[in-house]
Image (tube, rainbow, N blue to C red; front, side, top):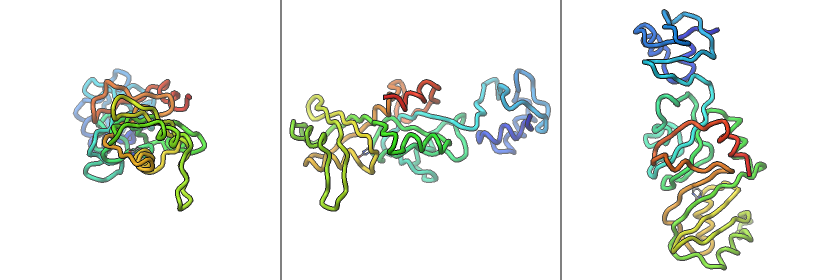
Length: 231
Ligand code: URA
């Protein structure tokens, strides 16, 4: 059992003073019963509603965003993707699981659970990411084998093998498992090509929910969370 104002503010959805005001205004219910005062002790597993809408007070959130272009995966900046996270999902300490470039769109995982994020980006897990790319020139067979062989640069830097599939016209699908900085763009540059548009479609076994419009976010289901680690 915990004070009602603390339950609300610990979720990060409300500040302590907002929580007290919402309770004083009679807007907050726990398991269907109006909370009479901020100091009332409530069960931390209670179903809490504010203005009749259930709110998620779980400590950790696991979100999928369809990242739009023009936003960066860095906290505290004006055009941070985190500024697009709806209030009901917002928690202190939210961050993106890995990064997409400012001009890249698509599947972005967001959480406040460091252990989960680490397990997704850990090189040991080798989680594959699938991207759709529009490129400057059509992909040819030599590009596909170059991606499949991987690259070793003069400075010793290595790129692990990646799967390149030619799409219609000047488009392609790319599967990488390393998650390096600008990885897909750099792979194309190494074959004398250039990425004009990039969208992440899949992480592990989890596809981007195509019903999310650019900038929209929703919580992952438990099954979807597991899918990330499925082949
Ligand atoms: N590879 C890139 O080059 N950019 C991204 O945003 C993601 C993968």
